[in-house]
Length: 63
Image (cartoon, rainbow, N blue to C red; front, top):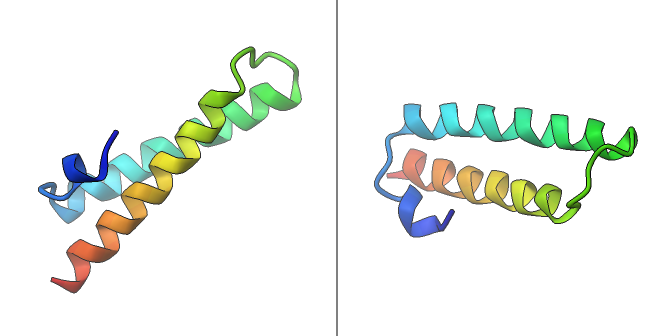
């Protein structure tokens, strides 16, 4: 996911995406702790996606 893809989305869409990604980060962390996560880079990518969505959300709110 790139930031340019998020710029044209509405605040409601971004909030929904943020909720989904936070849930994904939660499940990936749980899998990591229980040694079920084989590809640990998924967690890093999901956390970066959360940060991108938060940035786009704050930019949309200031407009």
